[in-house]
Amino acid sequence: MNGTIVPSCAIIFAGGSLPDLEPARRFIDSSCLLIAADGGARHALALGLTPAVIIGDLDSLLPTDRQQAERQGARLLQYPTDKDETDLELALDYALQQNCTRILVVAAFGGRLDQTLANLSLLTDPRFAGLDLRLDDGVEEAFFTRRSAQVRGRAGDLVSLLPWGGPVTGIRTRGLRWALSGETLLPHKTRGISNEMLGPLAEIEIQSGLLLVIHRRLLPLAPDR
Image 1 (cartoon, rainbow, N blue to C red):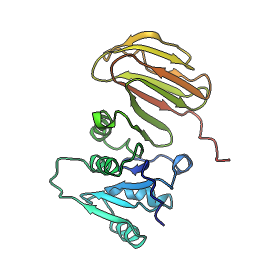
Image 2: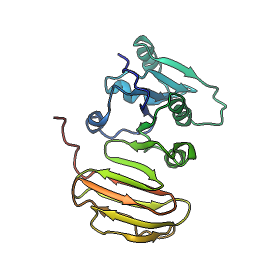
Image 3: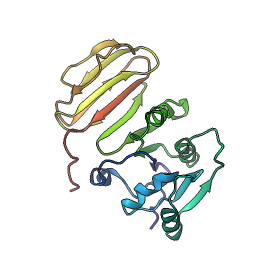
Image 4: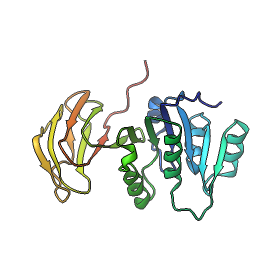
């Protein structure tokens, strides 16, 4: 059945890969507004969920998935194939229109490098600056910070800090093995790659710039309690 719509929260199922359903199942809140970007509906259905909305040109939506989703009450918003936006961009626009302030995009990685980079680039839209917007597939999560951020995981998890589009200055970290204390990271240098979490929480602050944070979980997510 459809998840109950909570205007402040949305989960978008993109069309990339989902390495393991179980880690994804543990962090998906089915009470959020569930949106599928075209063929991403297959991930929602595989998790036993029905998107409230499936949006895109629907060229990668399997007929069987379409029939099942429609039978369970999903609303289809179909756009022309010749369009300027990707299906994920349309889904993000829709979530904004619903006044969502927390958006989780599932299955935005894998398959095609151009699509993965485009999905990351979408997150830099200034309209998203005040939102909690992350990409996550249960193994890796990625998001941008313009000021401060927290990463929750376990000791040994990898955290990479990548300056996007220019230098990022005044970086301070807590909870990472190799601490930064006001340093600058440059786009053509790799100093921020593969830091390690010392415990369940890492904190990052920056003074200026746009910083891409990538968190790779080395251990499975803890089971729900």
